[in-house]
Each structure stands twice: as C-alpha cells, then as structure tokens.
Amino acid sequence: MTTTIRVVLGTLPPLLRDIVRATLTRDADVEIVSEVALHQEIAPAVERTEGEVAVVGVAPSEWVGLSGFLRELLASHPHLTVIALASDGRSGYVYRLQPRGVVIDDISPRSLVQAIRAHTSADVHLPIHPLSAE
Image (cartoon, rainbow, N blue to C red; front, side):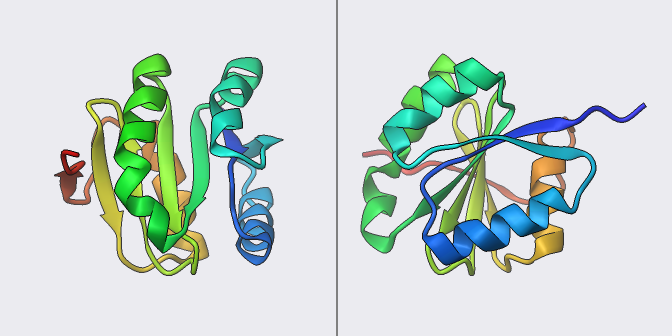
C-alpha cells in the first residue's frame, strides 16, 4: 500500500508555483496540503497539516541567509524534508535534518517528484553536501 506524501508549498514565484503545483497534482503519491506566502508561515503550516516535505523558492539574494532558516526549521521539525528551488526553477537542493543538502542540478518534473519521494527513503543516491557555515 502506498502512503501519500504531504507537501507544503512555500514561497515560490507565481509561474514556478503553478509548474510545481501542476507537476505534483499529477502524482497520486503526493498531496499538497498547504500553500503559504512567507518563509515564516512554513513551520505553522507543517505543524497544522503534518506536512512531510516543504518546497520553497529561493531568490539569488536569499541563498546566503537560507542555512539559518533551514537549521531552525529542521531542528523544530526533524521529520521534514525541504526542497529549495532556485527562483528560476533550474536548480535546487534537498535538505534534511543535520542539515544536509542534496544538489539537484537539473530540475524537471521527474527530478522534483524523485526528490519528494526520496523523503521516504533512507537511501539517497545523490551526493550530499553540508550547509555552509555562516
């Protein structure tokens, strides 16, 4: 029996949000349980919906401060997987507790769904990179 993965959509540019939503709604194993407009709204949405994966968009100027946000989010929600997509939708990272990131160099509908499914797998086949210290 397949378990549905509960996804919270965070801040994403409108076009990227539409693409991500369309991609995820085609997959029976994935359910979008909440959509929020600000990074600060992600943690409450995860708590309220028991979200397992959060997908967020990150503008180039936000990458520097992202690690602090991720440390707090993952520390308070150790079960959570965060997929941070570049605002242009071309690349992204998958983060889990400790925090560690998996580089996704070529974002496609298939790679996005694989990254979400990897949340349920202890075996990640992509190279894992630690967050840079600030």
